[in-house]
Image (cartoon, rainbow, N blue to C red):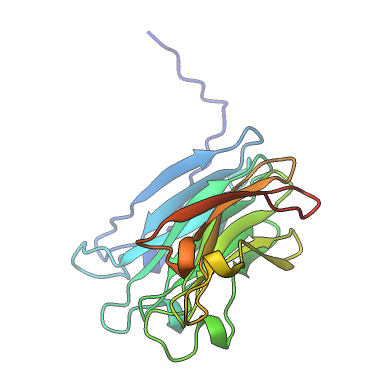
Length: 232
C-alpha cells in the first residue's frame, strides 16, 4: 500500500471567501493548468453566499508554488450582469513564466481581453476607443489568442463599423496594429477586418484578413509578420 507522507506540505488552491461560498459552506474550485515553474491557473465558482447552490459565474485565479493565490480578470460593474450578478473570467493561454491571457465577459454582451500575472495583476488588452466601442451594443469586444514566453500577446478588437482590428501587445502594453489594408481587403464602405491568431517565441505572428473586409463569412487571406515588422 502507498504510504502517506505527513511531512509534505499541501497548499489549498482556489478562492474561499463569501463570494465563492454558498450559505451552507459549498465551495468549488478547479485547476486549469500548471507551468513547469509551479505557477497554477484555475477557477472558483461564485455562489455569493446564497442558500441555493446556483452558480453566478466563475472567477479566475493564479497561484505560485507556495500556494499564494491571486484573483485575475475583471470584477467591476462593467463586467457584472445587473440582473443575476454573474461574472465570467476565462483563461486562454499561460506561458512558461506563468503569465496568462484571457478574457472577462462584459455586462452589455462585449468582452474584455487581459494579460495577468501574480506579480503584475491584470492588465487590459485590446482597443477600447470610439472606433472600437462607443454606444454600440456588444462593444467593446476584444479577444486575445496567444502569448509567447516573452509576454507578447496577439488578438483582435471588433470595430463599430463591423470591421475587426488585429493587434500585437508588447510586454509593457504597447499595441501594434497589423493585417492587410490594401484595396482587396477593404469593402466598398471602407470596412477592414483582420485577426492575429498565433505568435511564437521568435516573435513571428500569423493571422488572417477578410477579403473585401468580410471576416465572418467571406474569404480569408492568411499572412505572416516577421519580428522586424515585415508582412507576407
